[in-house]
Amino acid sequence: MNALQAFSYFLREAAVGLARSLRVSLLAIFTIAVSLFLSGMVLLVSKNLSRTVHEWRAEARFAVYLAPEFDAAARAALRPAIEMGRWTEGLEEITPEVARIRFERAFPSLAELVADRGEGALPFSFEARLKTVPASEMEAFTTWVEDLRSRPGVVMVDADQDWISQVETLLALIRGLGIALAAILLGASVFTIASVVRLTSFLYREEIAVMRLVGATEFYIRGPFYFEGILQGLLGGLLAVGALGGVHVLIAPRVASSLVAGALAESFLSPTELAALVLFGAIAGWTGAVVSLSRESLETPG
Amino acid sequence: MIQFFGVSRRFPTGQSALDGINLEIARGEFCFITGASGAGKTTLLKLIFREDVPSAGQILVNGRNVSLIPRSKIPFLRRTIGVVFQDFRLIERKTIFENVAFLPRILGLDHGRQKRVAFEALRRVGLSHRMASFPSQLSGGEKQRVAIARALINEPEILIADEPTGNLDQELSQEIVRLFLDIHLRGTTVLFATHDRVLIESVGHRVLTLAQGRLIDDRPSRRSPAPHSPPPPSDPMPSIAGTDSGESA
Image (tube, rainbow over all chains, first blue to last red; front, side, top):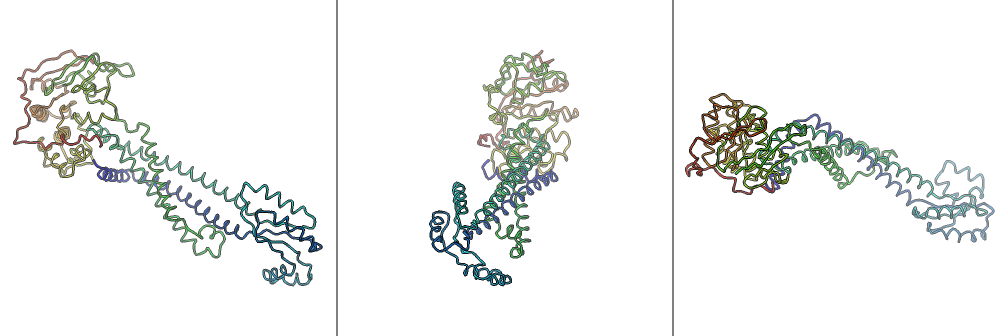
């Protein structure tokens, strides 16, 4: 029997097996679809949040606010200490006047508050773009920020890095929990598929005995059951991809108006990622079949 | 040739199914195996096609020690041995053609050849017109003939039958025995287990009698030796035996 004949035989027998134990097969397909859907959702949320954090990081600023009495000479003395930090670029001095114009532009309704208090309403500051701080340099970065904060005349040091790091930690936590949840659900799917394949092999036990009797090899006997597992996994994967697509279609119109929707659906999974989900389903199905048939379940009865 | 050298089979419970069996069955011989229920007939047959393994002793089938055949190679041994059971063991959801053509199929024969060899095997048992039927549509005698056709499909050197007439009436039993005799005339070694003494006496071939796992009698054939001739040229059986024995299947 050549590969094509074997493939065609396995596929047909697997389809018959699915139909023969339809209800439990549907349960297995549904279980794997749910676990792959949740895995896909975790991937989708993680992907969109990562992109958002990446955008925030690109816009992250570093600012050192100075006391009003800090004169030009003191500022000139402080500047090298700020430039020493290798995590910033494009350092510029923001005068109170520039700060006031920015404030009025950002908060037009509050412009009077600043105007009433005159020139000293907003402090002089240094501003720079904040580069990505690698985890290995985080300690040095924090020490440098603390050093700046402790200098006389420095009122406040504002590093967006602080909260971006917190968001990243949250993101890592979401990812970890998602992966753990997906792994548990996939384990349950593998178990369900293993049970279904085991049940099917039980239904076929007499046929299997006949197959052995006439000289069928294990490859020929087990092939249809492996294909049945793979088929269940593939169908579950396709169902999950369809559900993910449906969720995306529902949420996409709200992306512009909702932060949550943006985090979920600004960009969808790539074809490669979707194909990987379906493939993962097939692998889980195959694993279930292998697990099921590895326990001598196909031994001749009697 | 089938040879048993001091073969015993004891189950883990301590019960002995066979005890020190020594026997030799020549190529092309027709041999009845008889004895009461539980005498060890089925166990003896199972040992030949490696459905079971002896606890002690050696079994040679055409010079090969079947106990030493690796598990992965057992299917290739079974393709040289046809087996027929009392309960037919047909696959109910498959047609008669699919039941009979199973081995040609796994050997990779194209559909046309599968059909030809299945047709010929069924013609030999008089059921070529039932290829599209399902087992449930056949009588007991017809089912057994289908099982025989399936056993013959690969032109086995040895045909083993375990109480093949056990579920049939006397008339159908005689019909089935005639089929086995016809197969034997073509040179096939036939081992026919039965407890039907009338049937055995009506044929007159060699009889091995078992009792409580021991061979208590070995009565030689009263008939003249079979010619062991190949099938006549006018009645050829399309062969699948010459094809790849399916080591890859």
